[in-house]
Length: 351
Image (cartoon, rainbow, N blue to C red; front, side, top):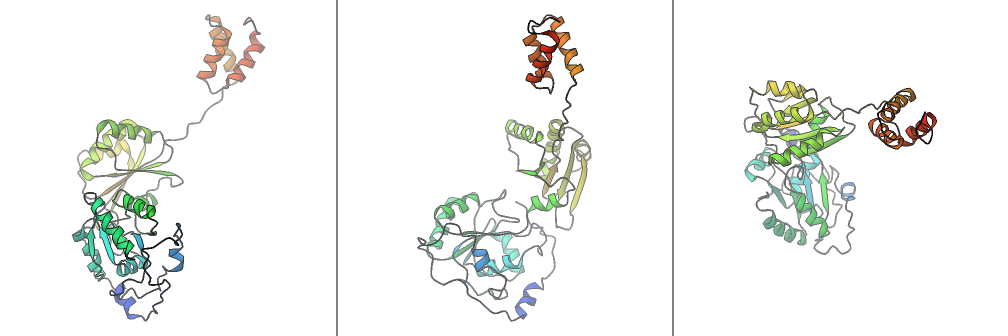
């Protein structure tokens, strides 16, 4: 979803040369046998990361070392902008797998070339998912290892990958997360809004009715709300959000994170609508809106309840109807209002 900037370079990385210069013992913790037959493999394969995924398992500077990983699908997070934002483990995995799936091989090729990774690339996007699933399963049955990356960030989060992970799990192949950058978490961590609880909405529906319905549901949540917004849709988003959430609701617009022109704009939705009505921002946008404030419910006093009851009864309402109306119109429980009404009026409703 988030693309690396074509005009921003993080400079030649010294990381591969530094690592390659060290003598790191190559420790093979996994047998080289193929995993086409997985009848004896446990369904829960999270132990892979603790038994064979340490940074010292093999030399990450050696791009020719393939087949040292246990076969399976590796979900690898990649930078959302700055090429330095990649983990040592991610580099090792990308060097060691037999195949790397990516949304755009031309785009991901820049990342791999930057770190001198020569693993074959194969496109995987929403238009060829079914075709590629067959290819991936065939390779996994042959005992190969496959890494999945998106153009930027973590695969499967508003990016292709969810269906492939489901398929591999259903076929009892290991699906291994290799954590990395996420625009959602990056924006949230620097937003200044509450992080105790948050809701990731992602991209809103394109249809007007569905989009506004989703925003209406989101506006009533007390957790921080997070959206991905295309720059040419920002103005429309802010106009609709200010009318649904209210002009006074705080928001944060995170743009071009980790890149040269990174920007965090903070203010209210009303202010944002005014500022960006004449300004057309560029680059990927993650937009956060503070959750709805908890409403403080005030319990009415007995004097207030009695006053309400007497007003309703004197205007001709029955005692039971007066009790019902007072209970529905206040935070008082119906049982409490009824007991008070009996003390005041008695069972016949007269005082």
